[in-house]
Image: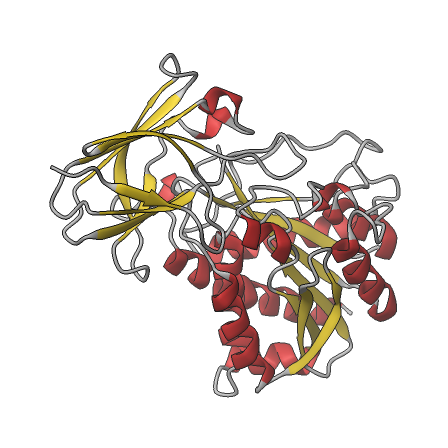
Length: 379
């Protein structure tokens, strides 16, 4: 029987083939360029029709978030439309930490990824579709020469910024963006209409296109973590952040959401700005109220699990949520979705998925409208 074939030579592909013997392969994840970050993988296996695959990812104790592997099942698709989960087994003591993926494809080609990919081609399709309905502008260009795309809509006084995928391997963030944009740009959607009436919305679906195309987990083309650049971005290291922050300076910011994914915590949650030096009571109450509204709206959000809260005055201002809250006095937040599943409302077949990410984007917009209406009633 012939050996299977494995390739990652495509948009966001990432894998190194160490060995193949029949249906079994030993693999390693390539690190981000000029960086020690590694966790994202995306590859295809061919010649495997109705054969039991055993795919062993090795060296995972040295990845960025080894705590993300226990309880994790790899994403798999045979049509690149529906992404399910393949049975995966974590063994900390084997091959420097290994994840063994087992799957029997029904066809000749199967695709595996850390999360359902959101390709740059799909990104350009999204931008092209939305640019016909809303305003478009290019905020700047990346080190690889790609545009930093921004979609804008609405004529209200409230300045809302939504931006995603500073960490390119967190592809669920752009699925979230697709869902949010479908609501915001739909002339028949009442929530979208009311938000456009109240707000000027600035939406950056992918803040790190270079890292996305290169198959990085966390950094841009220079190996820089963009979410540690917001206090002093430079054209040489972080032109993406510089372009976005300059545009924010021009418009001002009243509400901002930075959309991410978390490797380890099996839940959707928010992270705020409690540690900024100039924290105001109304800022913190606005953040807490938004979390309450979102938790009431959807079972795919919770407030029990999350990150530790920074001590007063100890917030890291190089991170966007803290920088924006300090810089503009706004309500800002980081939304985190899981690579595993949202365990409070678990779904075995897919775990956390593109479909749930898109729905959460729409639920977040519904919560934003409620939040704005409450704010208006107190004015």
